[in-house]
Length: 267
Length: 267
Image 1 (cartoon, rainbow over the protein chains, first blue to last red):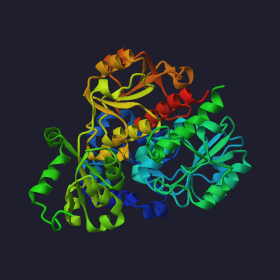
Image 2: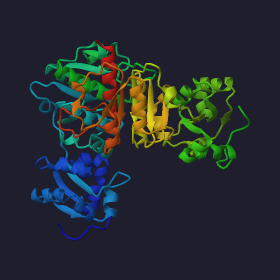
Image 3: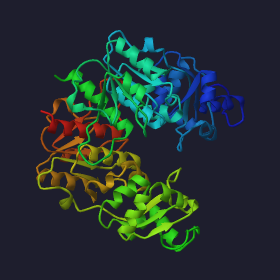
């Protein structure tokens, strides 16, 4: 434990972490915040990702293994008051554990393996909760990588990190690639590029999903722009069997990703 | 338009609607609030469901068809100030349209048709956003009904109504049935009762989903209690192909419901 309990909300250490709740400062400092035991655990599984750990005395008693692991890795552990954790937290009920991490994204070329099977592209996805949930679903479906295009939300947004439930640390994440560039690159790597859109001619029921596939998911309200649809090999919609107008974006993405994952595995 | 613009937050009419943001008063008055053009549109498609409509002058210009439809149905339309709508709204960005509706749920016996194919049961689901998203997915997947057990969130909760995106008005909804009672009733109606649980022996990949199925979904954090698992014909998990620990509840539910819907339709 480095020094005594941090209680001053205005201390330089707290202020340096607090500013990471803003995207501009995350970009500038090349760091972000991962909150809660699950995120901290997953961050600590990666070498050199966790830079600092803030913890309350109470959280330390609940998760001694995380504090031990951080200490073993030489990560500075700051015991802080509940008030300090609340100041750094972006949740209603702060969990008493928060890691400052280095950004983990990688270039597109590096993220996609030589023979990829499944990649998720988030184009113009603006809701951080949706984006995080799609990352989690992509991870669960065994995707090779997740690409956030230049017009999408920041994956390091607190809500996105939280909704990803650790998946941000599990699979290669790419940021800032224009959708059309991503589509072309993924096609060159042997993936069939499918745009998920309610206006698609085909449905999941009438496309063969057993081959390597990249899915592009669009904006919550207005779907995918023309130029992205034009880059896709096919535009596919989730069939609506009832009266709903559409599916929630994260739900639709999960259905598409799992349809691919299962078609690739189940004969 | 009944009278002049409502501006007084303390007027009896506003207070009578405002109290419907609380479950106890919804139960007592047998009414709930449906906010936004999509919810209002779907409510107006059902006979006698919409009891009152609050609208701002601006929303009226944007959605004249909804005001016309309400008027044709003899629904009192109250033009109100943005402040009044904000007072009644439970969203950060009120949409200027809000209907007071009568409760729409039906008894279990009535909700389930003679030869049902797909039913979703929400047992101990506590997050209203998740519950609404599951309702929407169930609707999209062509489910016959959605059952909220006695330990689940209130489907008339504002967040749940909003997340359902109109689906609350599309398919029969049952509330307050104990999970075990629902399971037995659904089995008697010829449905195979599957509990969705991360601890399931079988995965979606190794169960035959082509027959009539009822899915039971559990709590976000701790899944389904033993007594509910014991009532199920089988406990099934969504396979995790990557490193994610689990899926978000609504995402998992959508994957299960669509797996059933597609197995029932695609040869």
